[in-house]
Amino acid sequence: MVRGIAGRRKRYVEVEAEFLADGTVVPRAVAWHDGRRFPVRAVLGRRRCASLKVGGEGVRYDVVVGNAHTFLFHEDPRWFVEEIVPEPSPEDAGASARCGDGAFGA
Image (cartoon, rainbow, N blue to C red; front, side, top):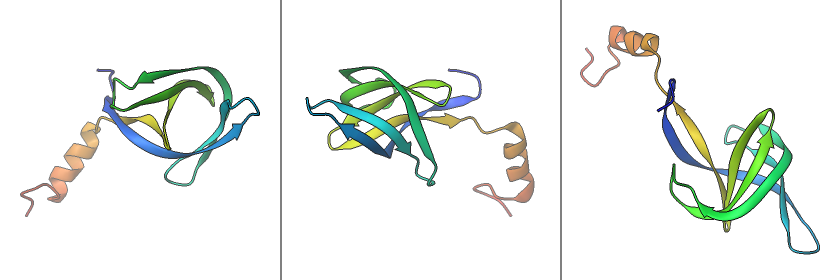
Protein backbone atom coordinates (compact mmCIF):
# COMPACT_ATOMS: atom_id res chain seq x y z
CA MET A 1 0.00 0.00 0.00
CA VAL A 2 0.97 3.58 -0.55
CA ARG A 3 1.33 5.67 2.58
CA GLY A 4 -1.80 7.72 3.18
CA ILE A 5 -3.95 5.58 0.86
CA ALA A 6 -6.11 2.87 2.45
CA GLY A 7 -7.20 1.51 -0.93
CA ARG A 8 -9.32 2.23 -3.96
CA ARG A 9 -13.01 1.94 -4.77
CA LYS A 10 -15.06 2.03 -7.95
CA ARG A 11 -16.64 5.46 -8.37
CA TYR A 12 -19.14 5.90 -11.19
CA VAL A 13 -18.88 9.35 -12.76
CA GLU A 14 -20.52 11.43 -15.46
CA VAL A 15 -18.37 11.98 -18.53
CA GLU A 16 -18.67 14.55 -21.30
CA ALA A 17 -17.46 12.84 -24.47
CA GLU A 18 -17.11 13.61 -28.15
CA PHE A 19 -18.18 10.98 -30.67
CA LEU A 20 -16.18 11.23 -33.89
CA ALA A 21 -17.43 10.26 -37.36
CA ASP A 22 -15.26 7.11 -37.35
CA GLY A 23 -16.91 5.91 -34.11
CA THR A 24 -14.08 6.90 -31.80
CA VAL A 25 -15.16 8.13 -28.35
CA VAL A 26 -13.03 10.92 -26.86
CA PRO A 27 -13.67 11.83 -23.19
CA ARG A 28 -13.51 15.62 -22.70
CA ALA A 29 -14.43 16.13 -19.02
CA VAL A 30 -15.28 14.20 -15.85
CA ALA A 31 -18.06 15.40 -13.52
CA TRP A 32 -17.40 14.34 -9.91
CA HIS A 33 -20.18 13.27 -7.52
CA ASP A 34 -19.96 16.58 -5.62
CA GLY A 35 -20.52 18.67 -8.75
CA ARG A 36 -16.91 19.54 -9.55
CA ARG A 37 -15.96 19.25 -13.23
CA PHE A 38 -12.48 18.25 -14.40
CA PRO A 39 -11.45 18.79 -18.04
CA VAL A 40 -9.51 15.95 -19.67
CA ARG A 41 -6.31 17.64 -20.90
CA ALA A 42 -5.12 14.68 -23.01
CA VAL A 43 -6.04 11.13 -23.96
CA LEU A 44 -2.78 9.16 -24.08
CA GLY A 45 -4.29 5.87 -25.17
CA ARG A 46 -7.19 3.47 -24.95
CA ARG A 47 -7.54 -0.29 -24.82
CA ARG A 48 -9.91 -2.97 -23.64
CA CYS A 49 -8.90 -4.29 -20.24
CA ALA A 50 -9.98 -4.93 -16.66
CA SER A 51 -9.50 -2.80 -13.57
CA LEU A 52 -7.45 -5.00 -11.25
CA LYS A 53 -7.78 -2.51 -8.37
CA VAL A 54 -11.58 -2.21 -8.13
CA GLY A 55 -13.02 -4.81 -10.52
CA GLY A 56 -14.92 -4.31 -13.73
CA GLU A 57 -13.83 -4.22 -17.33
CA GLY A 58 -14.35 -2.23 -20.45
CA VAL A 59 -12.36 0.31 -22.42
CA ARG A 60 -9.64 1.91 -20.31
CA TYR A 61 -8.66 5.43 -21.31
CA ASP A 62 -5.25 6.66 -20.15
CA VAL A 63 -5.95 10.33 -19.52
CA VAL A 64 -4.37 13.45 -18.08
CA VAL A 65 -6.65 15.40 -15.73
CA GLY A 66 -5.01 18.49 -14.27
CA ASN A 67 -1.41 17.36 -13.74
CA ALA A 68 -2.33 13.75 -12.95
CA HIS A 69 -2.11 10.74 -15.24
CA THR A 70 -5.01 8.43 -14.40
CA PHE A 71 -7.38 5.85 -15.86
CA LEU A 72 -11.00 6.36 -16.89
CA PHE A 73 -13.01 3.22 -17.67
CA HIS A 74 -15.99 2.98 -20.02
CA GLU A 75 -17.97 -0.03 -18.79
CA ASP A 76 -20.80 0.39 -21.32
CA PRO A 77 -23.04 2.20 -20.66
CA ARG A 78 -21.37 3.71 -17.55
CA TRP A 79 -18.01 5.32 -16.78
CA PHE A 80 -15.93 4.84 -13.61
CA VAL A 81 -12.63 5.78 -12.02
CA GLU A 82 -10.51 4.05 -9.37
CA GLU A 83 -11.15 6.48 -6.52
CA ILE A 84 -8.49 6.80 -3.81
CA VAL A 85 -9.69 5.98 -0.29
CA PRO A 86 -7.47 7.94 2.12
CA GLU A 87 -6.27 6.47 5.40
CA PRO A 88 -7.87 8.15 8.40
CA SER A 89 -5.44 10.48 10.14
CA PRO A 90 -4.44 9.75 13.76
CA GLU A 91 -6.03 13.08 14.74
CA ASP A 92 -9.37 11.97 13.28
CA ALA A 93 -9.26 8.68 15.17
CA GLY A 94 -8.30 10.40 18.43
CA ALA A 95 -11.01 13.04 18.09
CA SER A 96 -13.63 10.39 17.44
CA ALA A 97 -12.59 8.42 20.51
CA ARG A 98 -12.56 11.53 22.70
CA CYS A 99 -16.02 12.61 21.56
CA GLY A 100 -17.64 9.24 22.20
CA ASP A 101 -18.55 8.78 18.54
CA GLY A 102 -17.28 5.19 18.39
CA ALA A 103 -19.46 2.09 18.31
CA PHE A 104 -19.57 1.99 22.11
CA GLY A 105 -19.44 5.74 22.82
CA ALA A 106 -21.11 7.06 25.93
